[in-house]
Length: 261
Image 1 (cartoon, rainbow, N blue to C red):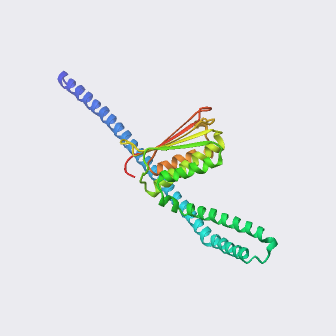
Image 2 (image 1 turned 90 degrees about the horizontal axis):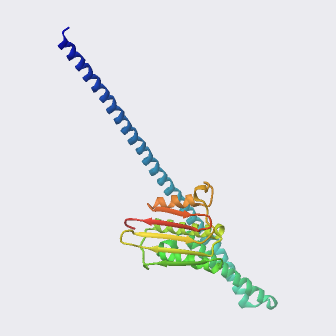
Image 3 (image 1 turned 120 degrees about the vertical axis):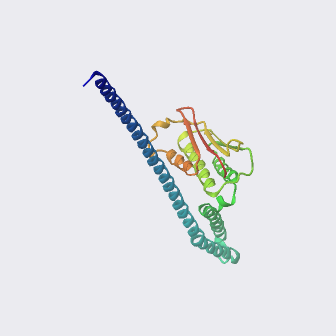
């Protein structure tokens, strides 16, 4: 074999070797890309599954609450109404004068209990959520907490009417209730501030802040004070969930909703 043929053979060998190495590198790159795409697909599928599961759980919870509300209204409510009518009749007939005052007291207690039961039944059947704006619903919670006089709760908003579909209203209300209850039970706070605003760049922003003892969010266990559940609820409605808390510096929760109601 001449020098020229040997040189050509060496060049071809090197060329094939380089092409082989390039092919291997391309294959590895494509393999990594396919693997990354596959993992992303699995992640997206799992996220969709989790959201569907959470949505289903919320629907089951709502259906159960509605059923309990209807039972309270149709069964216990009717019985209390009947007892109220009986006691009212006894008061008017006045057949037992020495017990008339006590019967009147029983009548007042029954009527008060009946009003509480109707209010509870309405809340459980979600009529209250369906019929009212989110501003009204949050204001009711604020009024109830201020009546307890355990801490001062203020509520600020930049528009009276914010139209939201039922699921979003329900989730925002439940998250607000969860945060308020956690603040009362665990934060030992003196003040809670709630802000609900709509901006051109953001459809809706809910911010709740307390001046309590705070906590280390990274150390909250899965069975802690319900913060993970609040985050999952926010994810159901596509909300951006952000919670900031440090020991002795209070806790701030922000939920941002983009897009249409």
